[in-house]
Length: 296
Image (tube, rainbow, N blue to C red; front, side):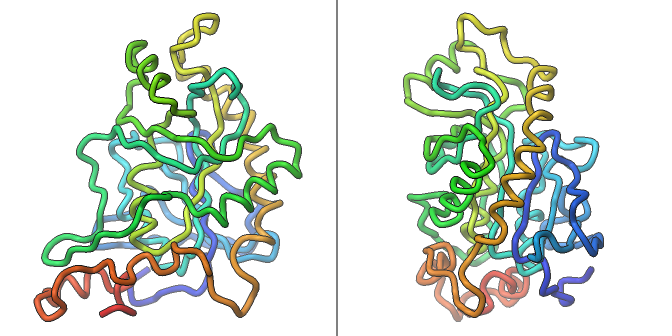
């Protein structure tokens, strides 16, 4: 699919994390292979309809889990979803619990992020165009509340709010790191929310996370140290729960038909582009056209 052939479908996107590589419930399925200025996304994006809503599904690590967290083409992923007309992203990810009250198999809908990644490309704005978006509240409050209500309705043990610390990976934490993160007061630890959330904000897309706790990281004295077998075993139990939450949430995602989003995500670039307009290279304008068209 070329960038000029921008689709009207896919206004709600689901990014599936570890263990969540397919969404077979999608009707009228088609695969979109999209080339972006930042390369190809993690995999073909499957578009279709779910609960009467246009949906796009992207397996974050690629089908078969081929990409490590630090290899993810996050800019290509978010850019491609923007091209497809996506306005809301529901991110599903596996996380370690950093608090006793968050047990394995619980779901957390975080409201804050702490960045411990290293060297990941985390902005679209480079090459002669600079923008500084607000990121004090990195998750969309409206979308997060919708997910919380849906999770409660389907009977999931769900926690509203909390801090997600994003580590580089792909190795898990040392015990020393895990203990220090707990002292910082974080709630869950994962490897993929950043730079996804930052890029979604720059693209003016609402972003919220269903973070499924798979383990107690390695701080818990009475639990075995985290292993990939434990993570996958617990995550697979939560995949169906995640799908049920998404199905329940879909009818309430976004504003009523015919109205505009009222959350700050929808206008994140308003007054954020600081570069003098007549000095922005034409190449930069063309490269970021789906993001900046209404401002330039």
